[in-house]
Length: 231
Image (cartoon, helix red, strand yellow):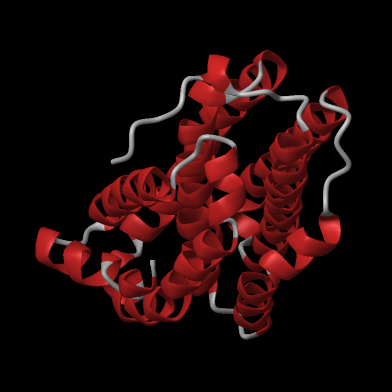
């Protein structure tokens, strides 16, 4: 892993940093919006879990407001056009799965892939963030583990009948994460968030989630490797 740049070496008010922040900040804002909408969709698909899912969706909206405040604090306008495009493929895949009533695929996309991606990004960002953003992000990370846990618990309880769909959904959606990371590699580097550190943290989070659901080590390695060459 590359040595991380100390936060004291970053000029948060420089135009270079603010340009990168405008894109990364937009990505996390849009990510929380996507999560909010996805949990509302899941609440319709899973009426027996509706209260829990509505609670999770409200938490995501709180996170979105927090990250909007991070941008305002640095006087940065988030590049939401970029962020919408950034999430377009995962967004479409979730919508398609929801329309077909494929709860397992929806949970893998939102509760595992997106949440693990978010947790990894926040872990790498916190040590190099400005003070305001650090406080906001530290609070968000605690919540994200709750969201990850919901998907893990449900999928573990339904593992036997979900396994084949999980493997198919993993093959379809995990490669998208690697292409997404490539899209923001330069911006993340500018913010002292090396891509190899992001990949490593994501692989740890995602591998642990797959293990908690019921996959064996050999399966986890095989599933995690999908699309990794692109990274």
